[in-house]
Image (cartoon, rainbow, N blue to C red; front, side, top):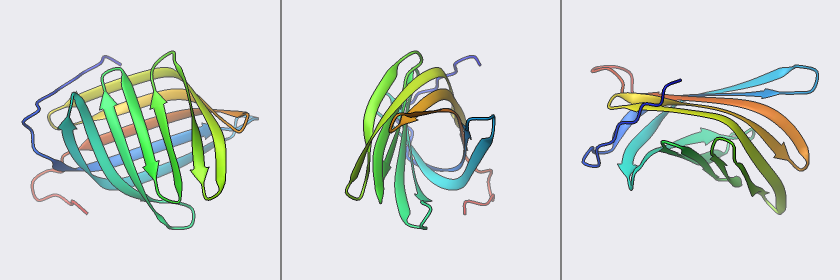
Length: 156
């Protein structure tokens, strides 16, 4: 995918529709797909686009999520019952810890491909990576799409 990058620091925060699809490949070829449709606040600051939204975990507890998008790096920050940060840069391995209650679990992300497109009306991010949690590698594909709802459209 060709990289498209739009930037205008003067743009105010806007509400956008957000779609997130995460596909995890398990041994034997089984794929587990998780989908999220939400409304996010989109703002620009310091050379990056930020999407802030709330999701639910498996126990229906609220999780605050932030996606920071730069042309060559995307960071996903999660804060709630579980806290962690994932950084995606093509060809780079990044490490961190998943904090859940009293647990601290090592997580490593090896990004194979990162495609970023941002225009004045929205954008998309596609990431292919291997996520290793507590020593168990899992191939993952992540697709994020955000767009400004049409006039009179549903903003949920």
